[in-house]
Amino acid sequence: MPKFIDSHCHLDDPRFDADRDTVWRRARRAGVERLVIPATARASWPRTRDVASRHSRAFPAYGLHPMFMARHQSGDLDELESWLAREQPVAVGECGLDYYSDRDSKKQQLELFDAQLALAQQHRLPVIVHARKAVEDAIGLIRRYPGLRGVFHSYSGSAEQARRLVDLGFLFGIGGPYTWERSRKLHALLPRLPLDSLLLETDAPDQPDERHRGTRNEPAFIEDIARSIAHRLDLPLDRLAEITSRNAISLFSLPAFG
Image (cartoon, rainbow, N blue to C red; front, side):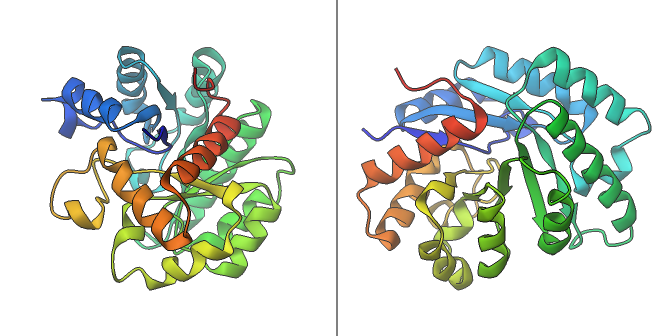
């Protein structure tokens, strides 16, 4: 059976409260060997930590998401620095820029993202980047931090922007939207990306793949995403799983498979 790493899954989401252990068992049966849980706001960090600690092979990341600017408060960045030092997560994130949902807070988003990039570089951690209608500005900020690495979750930028991100050492999280028939831009882009720049992700419980549209997404569905990618890239499924898992282990400093 192929061994997968779900590089972006919100297993701490309240929508999993009723059956989280069952969801995790299904994921393990589907071949999910590792799972990264990115937090989105200070209030959720303890929950993220607790869920990761209860589920073997799940690893937390802590950040301040741009879609929740109204929830963030003064002092959150200082608290984030304390959490990074004390809890030793695998990444800073989910952080980034979102001009689709809230352009009015653009200035505040830029300042918050810049501060989190600085913390990531200081603590020698990768970043998990959310960039919607904002890839160019995100690249501009990242260039200020030479050597910083990370992943653009649910990447939606251009091929030219992707090339620059590859040169900067960044990877791309590919999930359920890739399987959607209308995602022609993403279908055309993926063969142009180096295989060592790809990660698999579900973003569960959001962004389900085509086969599970209209239902709660979960990490066990990562095999459907992987099969779609492998088919379009003309790769054996085992080979794609091996490559993307190796990429995730390297980026997040995860334990290697036994």
